[in-house]
Image 1 (tube, rainbow, N blue to C red):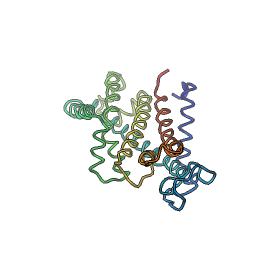
Image 2 (spheres, rainbow, N blue to C red):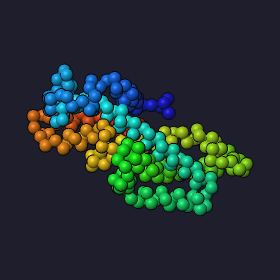
Image 3 (cartoon, rainbow, N blue to C red):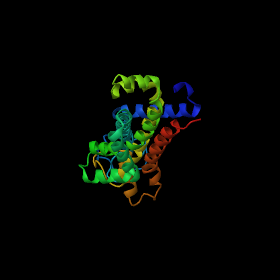
Image 4 (tube, rainbow, N blue to C red):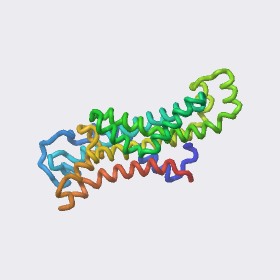
Length: 263
């Protein structure tokens, strides 16, 4: 896959690596603690506060950098787990077929009928408002598309001799996965990227509607706080309070999306 990277995808990879490095080093980059209320409220950008302060006196730049850690962590964990669940269920469908395949297939159809974000919001509202439940709600209600994609690919591979031989000797899900690992690797990577993309959008949406962990400092929470500020559109406050967080989300989502495009 890396040998075929276009210039656009290389740029996207560099951006995502920089995002990941920023997330890992966020505690060293932040000039202030995100819960430091000791500064004057609504200070304009300066050397001391690169993006000014919010109405509670917190440094906005520090909250933006902390958002790299929180949002990307949620994105990567949710993307990885939902992709794994979809792949495992797809292997189970193709290996056991019959009733097991039917149950999983119809369950995935049920999740596809109702928009994922509606189910995720419903679950998140009635669960304990913390980061773990936010991740779990995204994971358990967004695996269906991965399952559909991988299952359709597997059905085409079931006639291969190496698969028939594995089935003949009563191979299990793990044996089948070992045989088809290299065939499914590109599909799995694409699904993972798409799931990470969806996860960050879902988390941002949940935060925007005030759902999820109220203590987490994600980009969604920062966007929500900026929009709630009644004087956002006066004195160019929008330029340093709202726009940076939106740009961070936009660039992250766009970079992930461009990686999945075929050229």
